[in-house]
Amino acid sequence: MLRARSLIPCVLLCLAPAFVACEDKTNKSPAVDAGTSAAQTPGLDNPKLREALAAASASASARAVDPDGPPPGGVFPPELADARHAKNAPVKIQVGSEGADPKSAIARELGDLKGPGRTTIQIRTGPRSALPSVDLTLSFKLDKAKAGDKPSPASITAKVDKAVLSATQPGQIPAGTDKEIAKLTGSSFRITGGPSGGAEDVAVTVSKDTAAELKYVLYGAAEMLFAMYVPVPDKPVGVGAAWIAEARSSLAGLETISYRLYRVKSIDAGAISLDVEVRQYATGPKQPMEGMPAGEMQQFESVAQGQLKISTTSTFASQAQFDQKRGIAFLDGQRMMQLQMETEGRFSR
Image 1 (cartoon, rainbow, N blue to C red):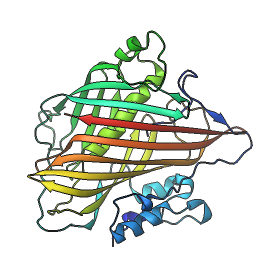
Image 2: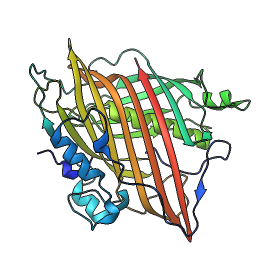
Image 3: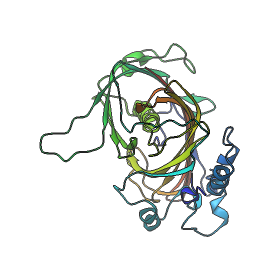
Image 4: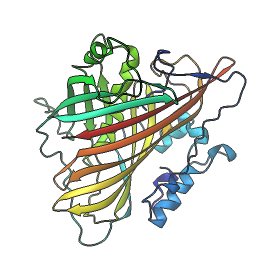
């Protein structure tokens, strides 16, 4: 039975008022639901996966801490986070089904990274608040080990060669926004690879003079790129195959343990279509999250769904659609703050 320890960031914060809303719930209980039902996700038709996801999605606030279950409110006690997945430990893969015959082996390598990637990122922070929609053009290169280094898993550097406003925007864009967006050019992502052929961590280098609120365009893209570098089983898989990749990673000061569920939709001439679902849990209530006021995290929810295309010769996706929702509630003195963010990402190359 696939348990994935019964579980299946962009950072959330109050940005410039022109772009985002932040709700202050003084002396009120947080309303973030850390137990949204992943088992209701369309396409998850494997009974064992549904059982595991249902356990992960059950409301943790209604029960004591289960060392094999999700943390209360989506936030691990630090000692339990370390027991669940130690820092710097490799990605763990648990296979729920190897799928139907015929099966195909997936090489645990990056393959050809030639050609630019084009990414669109749209971030909403409420019904009437959003960041500008941004198109990024990325170039990729395989990181090479330095002389004398021990052999290491393949890692990727993706550089922003161009950043422009998307053709479609969520609302009226202030004059001069295009110049601010252009300052994202030169930023980069480093996606650290692991022995299973997929991402173990992702880091962002923000170009000079980038506006503080626009960093979250990059963080949203980083979350998508993390899911696009797919850890794969060491056995051939067929249509219907499903596995969960557990990893511990950090982005912009927020450290999480994530569970990426991949399911094979189709295999055609070496091209593999995947569904992906992601759940993340904070590794502790006190974290130096960039842009956050000092306070203690009370609840954290981060869920995502998407579709990817990889091949039997490359575990890095050539196409992606990735939608993520996050909510956080934290206590800042006597104030209970609630923050939300929704990210839509699209990628092709």
